[in-house]
Image 1 (tube, rainbow, N blue to C red):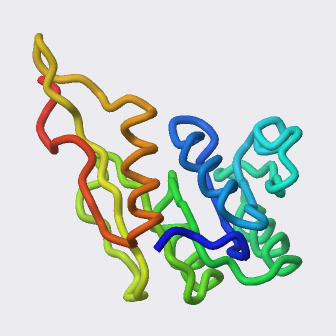
Image 2 (cartoon, rainbow, N blue to C red):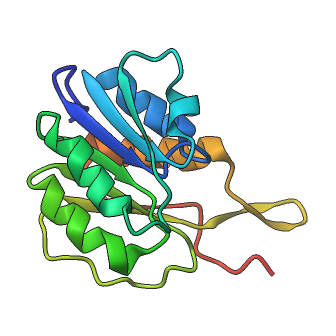
Length: 165
């Protein structure tokens, strides 16, 4: 089920290759908290986005998110692209309660241990065959897979999990 306009969204790390997915989430939610190093620049002029400029390497990263979320209604849909999965995911899952969580994983992330929380869908990024071998996924391909997971809550692989060599 796609988010309803009364839903509250959260996007962490979604302003680069996941920008289209973050904008789609924001268009379907009444408010979306966007967390990234340059969230303010990303959100400029979009009244549906509450921006939080935060660097994942800062010790204040999780406390800043927790403070921002405390000032909002509960998040219903979350899109997460995390650099420190083991450090950040358990705390975020605790903050997100019953939200539908979509966790984007790179092809090199292996099989991370996920908290035993219901509602986590994974989107694992692979590569695509082309005329001369394999190529990385485009931003549009990555966002399309992520948007689909936000809508239906199902885990998926985007592309194929094969070596680029």
